[in-house]
Image (cartoon, rainbow, N blue to C red):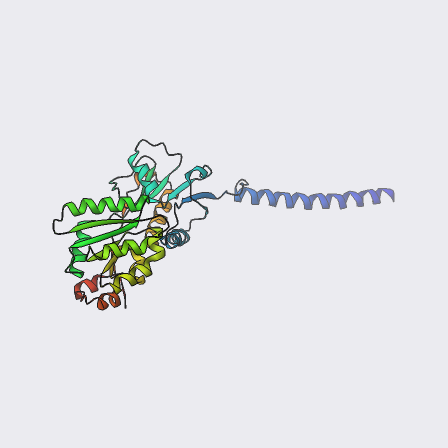
Amino acid sequence: MEMKKVLKVVLIRSGILLSLLVVLIMAIKTMVQQGPIQEPKQKRVLAILSGEKFEEYEPHLKGIKDGMIFNGLDYIIKTYASPSLIHEADLVYIMDPCLAEIIITQKGLDLPCPVIGYSYITAIAAPLKNYTGIYSGLDLQKVFSIYQKIIPGMRKVGVIYTRGSCEGEKQVQALKDMAQMRPNLEITIQPLDYYGEDINRVLSELASQVDTIYAVSRDRIIDTHMESISKFCIQNRIPLIGGGIFGPPKGAVASLAFDPYRIGRKGADIIRALNEGRAASQIDIVKVEPELYLNLTSAYSLGLDIPSEIRKDAKKVYN
């Protein structure tokens, strides 16, 4: 009797062990099929150096994010105003053209990680060791040829920008260089103070000297006061041009400019190429062409009849 009990217990335990052995074999088989256990992959960090946040900042950033989603890129995105805080980044995107141009001119700069830069003043024909990017420089000779078709009487142009602005200073210098090659065009430069408190005085002084006013792009003070600048110009029968893509919707007659959202999408394509393992030095600089924006209401109020071929070429027309 005791022997029967012992055998029964042994059989029960053997059945349990056999079941556990089967489960263990199945688990091992599954592990072999799936491969070794991997640690969760840590997301890469994309640091975006924004510099001063102009009106173009948000659409540029949105273009980057939308492009990354479209390309299936999953990064932790951190934005900074200063390059001193990017030590944790795997990739850096520079939205500040002045900082990008420092890197371009200092070709021996040792970059700790791949850098994508956006530049529109200093041309760069080829990528550097750990740097590539987007160039959207204006050919001001061609730009002012188009402006003079829109405003046939343009001879004396007053240029406004914020004094001390890196980007404004670079645009003004480019305008001066262009004017030297166009003897039929006279440029008068009038800087605004940092807070724009002298804007009415500057505009009033220019009104007696020029037949057209040109506002630089990516300028915080001009972005803020563009509507009042436009109103002043219309009241004084002076065409206003420029101001980037945000000039015409706020009253400027015309602006040849770059779409910051489109630039951001181009930047996301470069991020994809880097993510696929390509070196920055192997990725060509992307050249973006300017597009024309018009405000027909402002033009008509000033007696300007914009030629139909120019209207057809415009990216966007505001009525």
